[in-house]
Amino acid sequence: MTSRERLLAVMNGVLPDRVPVSTYELAGWNSAAWENSEPSYSRLMDYIRRNSDCIAMWGPSWSNAGLGGLFTTWTDTVDAERETWMEGERRVTRTVVHTPGGDITAVDANDPGIYTTWHLEHFCKSAEDVERVLSIPYEFVPPSFDDLPRIRSEVADRGIIMPSIADPLCIAAELFAMSDFTIFAFTERDLFKAVLDAMLPRVMDVLAAMLEAEAGDMYRVVGPEYASEPYLPPELFAEFVVPYDRPMCDLIRSYGRYARLHSHGRLKNNLDSVVATNCNGIDPAEPPPDGDVTIADIRGQYPDLGIFGNIELKVLEHGSPEDVRSAVSVAMEHGKPGGRFCLMPTAAPINVPLAEKTADNYILYMDTARRLGQY
Image (tube, rainbow, N blue to C red; front, side):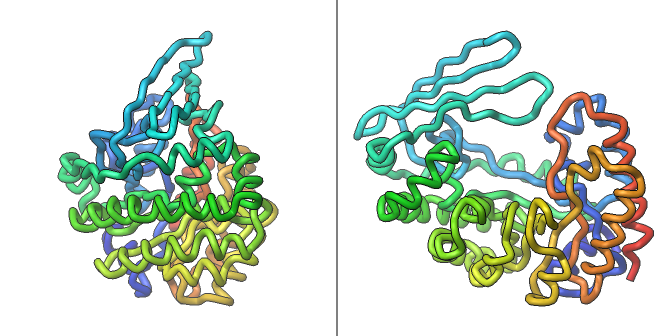
C-alpha cells in the first residue's frame, strides 16, 4: 500500500497492510512548513520523508483573518490597529480592534528559537469586552485556495492533507486568559453560550468553503479540550462541545471526508460526548498521567472510533531508547486489533535547534513502529 492508501484504509475502517506511522505536525511533505527549512531538523525530516505516512497539516490563506489574525476561522471585516516592538530578542505585538461597542485589545509575543506565540493579554477581560465582540457585524470573507495545488502535488500518494478548523468553543475560549475563561464559563453561562452561537455560523461558512474546494481528506476539529477535565465538568463539555461540533462533523461526513476531534487532557468521563459529535476519530488520546484513558479503554468502549495517538512527546524528547520501544509496543498491542489506528505522537517539538536525542528517539520510534505494525 502507498501511505495514502494506508491512511484512507484506517479512515474507512479497512485493515491496512500495517499501522500507519505519523509524526503529527512534523510533516515531511510540505515545503512551506518551518521544520523543512530549519537546518537542525534536516536529518530527522529526511528520515520522516522516507519512513512515515504523511498527514500534512495545511490550510487556506485569508485576506482578512479578523481580530488581529488570532483566529483563522474568524472572517468578519473589522477595523484593527497593530503596533510591534522589540523587548530584547522578544517581538511583541499589540492589536486594538475597534468594534461598534468599543475597543478590545490583545498583546502577543514571539521568542527566537521557539515556534509558538505567547498570548500576554487576551481580548476579553470582562463581560463588557464580550459584548463588544458580539457587536461586530459578520461578513464572510472567502479564503484563498491558491496554495492547494502545491500541497496536493507535494503530498500526492505519500499521505493525506488535513486542514485544522477551530470549533466555536476554541474561538470563544481563546478570547480569554485560561483562568478567566473557566470562571466566565461558569458565572456568565448564557453570555458565553451567546458567543458560541455567534461563532457557529462563521465556522460552518469556513468549513463549507474548505469542503467545496476539496481542501483535505481529513479535518481536525480543534477546541474540545478547553471543556475537558479539570477545566470544566463533563456536563459543560456536553453543553459547549456536542451541539456545536456535531454540525461540523455531520457536514464533513456528508462530503465523504473524515472528522477527527482533537482534545488533549482527560477524556474518560467525556467519551460518550465525543462519540455524540459523530466524529470518525480522535487524537491524541493521551495516556495517564497526562490523560486518563488508554487506547485499550477507548477500543473496548468504542471499537469503531478511529484513534490517532498516543506516544507522549516527552518520551521522544527525554526518554531512553527503552522508554520509546516500550511506549510503541504498548500502543501497538492495544491499537492494532481491528484496525482504525494510526500511531502518532501527542505533539511535536517547537524548539530550535532540535536536540540530537530527540531526533534519535523519533527515528527509533519510526523503526520500532514499522517493525511491530505489520498485520
